[in-house]
Image (tube, rainbow, N blue to C red; front, side):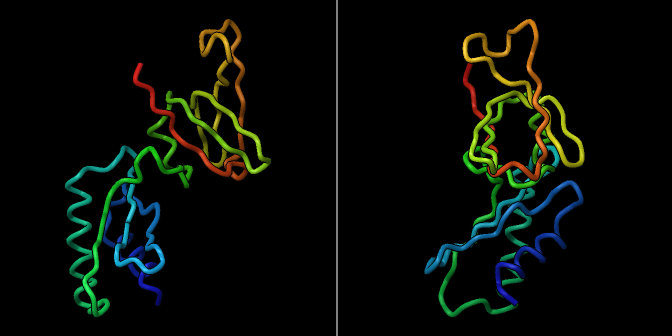
Length: 154
């Protein structure tokens, strides 16, 4: 079994129900393995630390590789695109940049989601979100290529 697939399986086995693996990656030729974990309400540093210890122990038991490796367990952070609909819930009310598979982009505030769709209030170029008649767009999650949370320091 591929080591990255195995790490994802071990992680899923170890994590509490409110936490989930977003991605496990290792760049070609690198000895660094990155495990990105998220939660329905975010993830705590201590939860990352516990998973890191658990995975390190598992890798040591498997005698993974003949050279030292680096294992990094963290949240995906805002610079990485959200991959799963489950990640959207904690971002209700926040602004998103959504790149659709149809090669278009939308910017708007996440106002709701259900099992396979999200609803956003589109941002007016001049008035922002302070418009008398907001424009709501419903987007099927299957149509989303990438979605990023927009960080605002206002």
